Length: 275
Image (cartoon, rainbow, N blue to C red):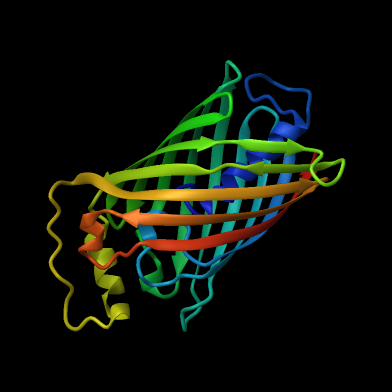
């Protein structure tokens, strides 16, 4: 999902590349669409809500196509390295993005997810997700609102609010080099229906005996985490090398159920081909 960690590059890379290609999703453009493929490594999982004190290093592969009218589709594959059993997940995404007035971006997408392997690495158990996001850009600042609806073992709704500042340098190091840095902060809110099953699956990894403490949420929808993110990407021709560091602070509720402050990084190499 496009919420906070692997998240970072799979969202920011297409935006940076489309800006260079010149695709305007507000109208049917004469510019071509592009195909994007990437290979990434992360020291943790791909969503702040799934991040607990179990480390989840993973390899990730992505293949995406972005058309010149705003339609896009992608396939993501995650292979977890740490578990003893073969553990992986695949996501199939379809979406539509549109820009209004040059500084308002809207994006709606559907995701089908398949997970196999060690259930402790599953995090939120869902098979279908619908996401609606909007962002407003003012000079170098971007404010973004993400809404996520996940349907699976339970039904959940999540709200992410983020603010970022974009810094870019053309002709960096080389004539065709482009450097982009986008420090951001993010606050996450959501329903708590997913927590009991997730806590139960991960309890044994902490040396817990018997059953975990009973989960008693103060309310169904609550604040869940605050994150600091620093993505850096360098584009040279069709290739982009990216890295992103993150630090996530879970809420008191999550900390009371074994979540800890998280830090890690994600590194990715991507190739874009105009069509």
